[in-house]
Length: 454
Image 1 (tube, rainbow, N blue to C red):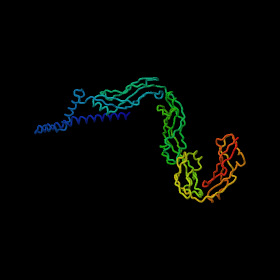
Image 2: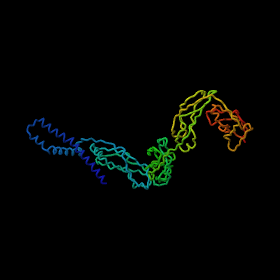
Image 3: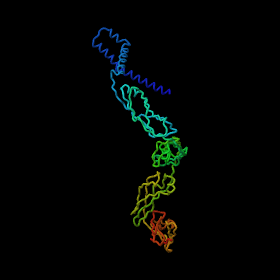
Image 4: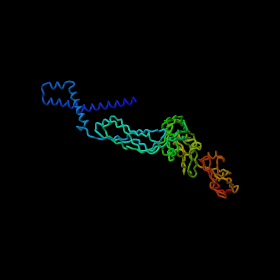
């Protein structure tokens, strides 16, 4: 209250000083110049008039008398030195008075415009005072629809005014409340360092109270705590505390409902930042067939393993990263510069490029007999058998350099048939062969076998 009185006093002091400066500029200074000009023009030699003017209080008294007379003439509008004008005070806030614990009000204006009309001096004073108060008093209104006038204090009585709008129609509802469970929405996760991830968010409360009228509460589908990752300033893994987390109510379409009261308005969140990663090997995969008579002797790479940063479920299914090189028609040593692509779902990898050196030698071959055939992708509830003993094993010819063939074991070779989509009956299916060493080529001497599915 004391501060308000002091502010009003300061306003009146500023206004009074402004009036004094106005009269000093318009009356006192011009009158002084006029008096000395008359003296100079009339060439008054006697010093009596000059002495009269040089007295300390002469000009002050004369100026005040003239100013007072001028003020009376202007105030009584005998002299209309200041024309009637108008100003518009836009977007003036409206103070609403009602019992917000018991009622919810719809249709309240956020602001209105005031048109002030009158003399320029009064308009100037109104602007200097700045004490424009607009009030919408609903204290005596109950539940229902009401048309209510907006009241204006009009700090300068000589001014006329128009409020736009001057009346508003409001609907008053009884306020009800419900308890809702909080959910979490993490924002701006893409702004985190690529090696980091939000692994857990813990709020200091699980439920909040929402208040409004019954129909409005029925629109609330969820109440969420908005966790803004930018506010954490997280540069490394750790636990961070985020206070004053905003709570927002949404409808079923995800639209924010702004007229829902949420208690409390904010919560405190404990955010855990982790950096899940996994080291996986690089697997070089030759694509195509080298030139006849040639074979890959060795493949060496500048990067043999990389660290992959991703969510735990992605890392669990990741065992290696493939890098393909095209060796079609290759018959001499060659160096490849390749890009290491991020696995699907990975945020970052420690290395993004690789140099691969391939050395070539003359090709030889070696046969491995009695490689068992594996049946893959058999449908549920079915069983399969080879039609004959010959259809259970194959001979595999492996091509490559002699040093690699000498190290190769039969157990390193896999022969299989793919039964996906096959039903009951007898089928002829192709035989596929692969091996652990991708620098070698594997060929089954038996191209197809017959199987019986029951």
